[in-house]
Each structure stands twice: as structure tokens, then as C-alpha cells.
Length: 477
Image (cartoon, rainbow, N blue to C red):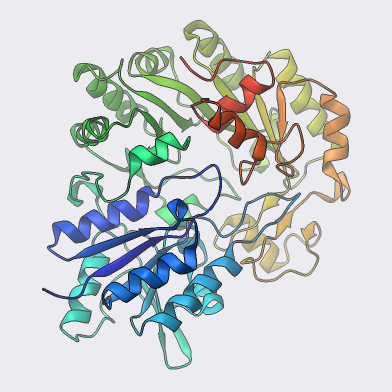
């Protein structure tokens, strides 16, 4: 039996987030007949003691760390998680001679920079289900890894990035979801993640999802998704989040997933949330989602001003969004609109139009993020790097975006929240991505009020729980 691979969930945020991507990779290793050990630091009281304990048990062949996010994506707080990843990487390398591997969405967005900064040995940029088992077999047999796709690794003083490929998810093993204690995550208030597809074909100028997951929506067969739901239900889990970039892209696949859940008689046993685009979205999908157990939808609307939507690369209009609100009102589905304030061309007039339109549409809950997080590989970042956009960079002069860097339209000044506060006043329907200790915040990272509500029994998407606290919709069925 070869040495095991030790997979470590490094995400210590509270409320917790279940490590779905790491579990998918771990189960691919199990399917390939390779030994796997798990260390979930989210469920440990002392991470250094836990790491030392695991590495003392048996020398691993490889130590894998997940990097879900590089920072909290908030203009107001700009909290980077890379110092923490660097710290745990250094501690692992101190305790073992095994190479340290990084992966996850955060790593995939800026893999070369994160590998260089953290001191890790190898990384997976993109899908890991096929390449990680192949990498392990190369290490076991002392074979060359230069032919393996999606690898990022050190070679002398250089960092080498192998070719990127997107794997057909139909070829992935059916996840059994037994490597992590998902029941414990639910007890701690987390929604357990499931993918129905991977990748995003949309053309938003700022979004890193196509960079991390690919620019095509790669679809999982509905029957496999239902099987994954069944397995998690068997282990006592019933609250879920569908981790797709946009559940309704494409529309027919979303409907097929819902129908498969309904035909399996699981709709009454599931409580799930998801992200959706405002288009395509019709009454049939809304009714199917509700019948299949959907409790709420997060719509990344960004703006309620047509000219600003166009500048952000969005393919829908305010009229489309009006139609969407009518459909949602008919079906009674709970939802939140997420707005992104401060993109190129944004002015006080466009912000005012957006806020006032949200009020006129009587949107029940609105999240507002001000400042656009810059990620390498996105159209907005390329425009900044090429000099097409010369102003609005925060911090000024930032050239590498591994540290939290943002674009904010110069027309809004340096404090966009001042204008937003003036426009929303004390309206409880509006939540802001500010410091977690502020009353109107929906910055979930270490939000003590949110954690307290969960301890008192609240369950659901974190935005849904916060809406209950602010006198809006109920967070539990």
C-alpha cells in the first residue's frame, strides 16, 4: 500500500463552509484506489496541534491544501487569506518532507502568484479530479509530471504552468460524500454544497468564475446529482447549496435537475439555495424549483440601470428584471438581488437609478457591494493592465492582484458607501458588504450576529437568516 495523501481543509471562517471541491477530489483518489486521510481544520480547536498529530501518524506522500478564497472580496475590509495559507504551508513543510499541493477556486484564479507567495511546491489550476490521482501515481513511481495538465509547479527558480484543460464532469466518479463530516457542518449552520455543472459562459467584465472553472458550462447528468442528494440525505444532511455559477445556465438543464429531484420524491426532504442569472428564467422553472425543494435564490443582478448593465458585460435589461420579479411574486420564492456598485462608468446618477428602481420593484432583499474586486485574467483587469482604464484603482498603483485590489469609478469618490447610505436610509431591505460588525452588513466572514442566530437554531442561506433578523422573510420553512 502506498503512502497516503493528506487532504486539509484550511477554511476557518465562521459560519463554516463545507469543502465540496476538496471532497470531490478526495473521492476521485479513493475511486482510483489511493489511500486518503482527511484533516478538517474547520472542526479543530488547535490547528497546529491537529496538523502535528496527523503528520506524526504516518509520513504522507503529498499534503494537499484547499484555497477556496484568497480574500473576503470586500472593498470595506480587504482581508487577505494568503498570509494564513502561507503560515500553514510553512508549518506543513517544517513537519514533513512531502510536497505541499494547493488547489481550489481561489488558487485557480491566480495560481502562479499564490504558489510563489505561499512557498508551496505544486498546485492544481482548474479541475483536480483527474490530475490529482495521476500526480499521485507519478510520485509513487518517480515519474515525470511535466505532461500532466492543470499543474503549476516549481522548477529550479521558475514556476511552470502546464496546459489547462476542462474535464467532462460526466467522467468524474459519483461522489459518495463520506470523507468529510457533512452532518456536523449542517449542525454548525452550513449549507452542504453540490455541483450540477461547472464553468460559466457569461461575459461579465469582472468575474473570475470563467478563469477558475472554464468558460463553458459543463453539465452533470441529473441522475448523478440526485444520487448525490440521496447519499447526503442518508447521512443526515438536508440543507444544501447548489454551487453552480448560475443554476439556470442553461435553462433546460436546470429544469431537468428539478424534474429528476421531483421524480425521485425528494422535493419534500430537501432545502436548497442557489445562484441564478435574471435570464433565462421563466415561470415553469420557478415552479419546478419550488416543487423540488428550493428555499431561496440569489440573483447577481449587479445594476438596475441599462447603460451600466451594458458596461458590466451583462446580457439582460431592466425590463427583463421587471419580468423576473413578477414571476417570483407569482410563485412566492424568496430571493435576494445582489448589486455591484462602482464599475466603469458608474456615476451618482446610475447608482441612484439602481437603488430607486429596486425600491419601485419592491425587491424584498438587496445586497450591495461597492468596489469591483480585480482578478487577473478578467476583461476589466486586462483593460487596467493595458492602460485603457487609468483611474479608479485601489490601492493606487496596484499591478498584481493577489492582494485585495479594487476598481471604483472615480465619479463616486473614495467612499461609495456614503452615497449608498444616503439613498437607502434605514430601509431594512438593503444589506451592505461592509465590516461584519456593522448592523446592515452581509459580510459573512466571522459575523458574530449571524453565528449567534445559527447557535439559536436558524438555518438557511446566510442572507436568508440575516433577512429574518432584520424583520423580513422567514429563514426556515
